[in-house]
Length: 88
Image (cartoon, rainbow, N blue to C red; front, side):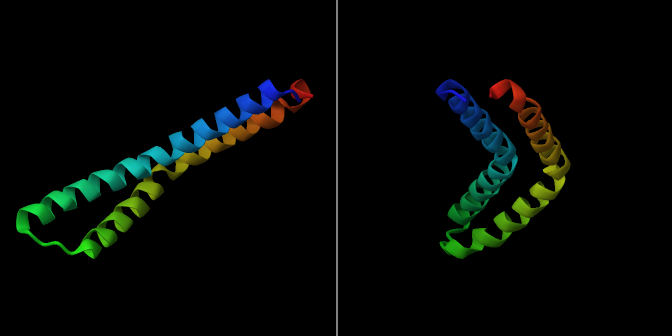
């Protein structure tokens, strides 16, 4: 395996990780922003209030996107294993 192949595999794995993690991160950021706006309007400055709603939204988001995530991971793993003879 040459350096270009290793860099390409690392790049693909990084993009896949970012692509899979994006829905959960976006949902968490959206809920955190919404709760921050509510806290600013009501002048409640408790930092722990946003933790539980973010956790719940992240769990629900992970459950919703789990089939899609598994399909992407299986597709990546299948392509990676299938291309082993071509890599060496």
